[in-house]
Image 1 (tube, rainbow, N blue to C red):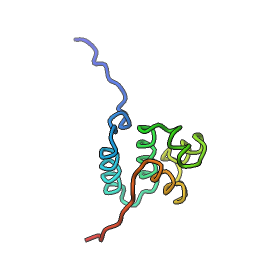
Image 2: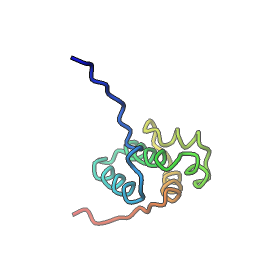
Image 3: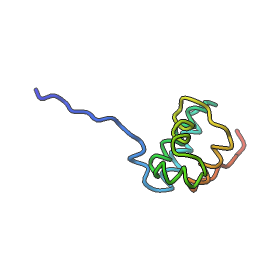
Image 4: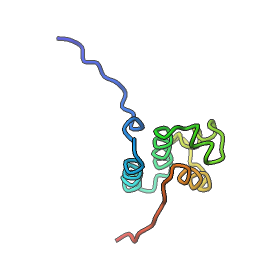
Length: 98
């Protein structure tokens, strides 16, 4: 029987359009259960899909600090999140929790 070859799944490879990126972030927000680092990692995945250098430039932060902030290992400042969301061409919105 031949060996099964597997590769690491990277969600960033499948986020090709702004609509897919927005849907992914929306799904992550629903699943996060208040976990800020989970959301930071999700935003990092979207940033990698768009191009981390471009996002960092548009957000006005260094690429290295952006990688650290969105690694999922720390909780970035809300200011950083807002800058990155804007650089990604996305909007945050609120709705009643019914």
